[in-house]
Image (cartoon, rainbow, N blue to C red; front, side, top):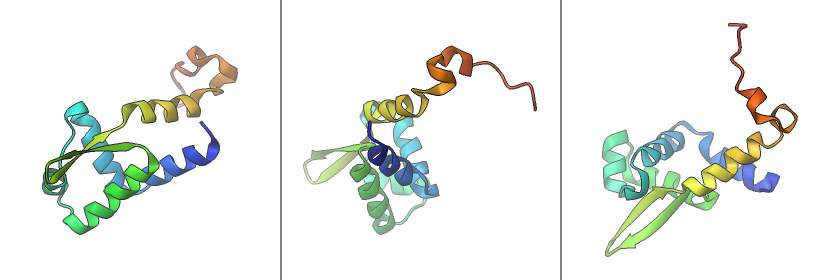
Length: 106
């Protein structure tokens, strides 16, 4: 993954409503949700939700499927996994198992 792609994805998630939408889509897995259900569940007006869904889709973190007159939105878990892999690829000098050590400085 290139830095620019990661920044775009992280920017899309760096907003409270978009993060809530993405997390809701993750919870619903491959079934996804239509905008009406998302709007109702998160209490977001449809025009505002439309803007957020467009941003998430443009970032590559959300995919769409046309179902007649409706669009179903799904979290693109492959894209999200690529993002997390990118963020962790150099963790602990490439020794990812070292990063799992609990922090005892709490």
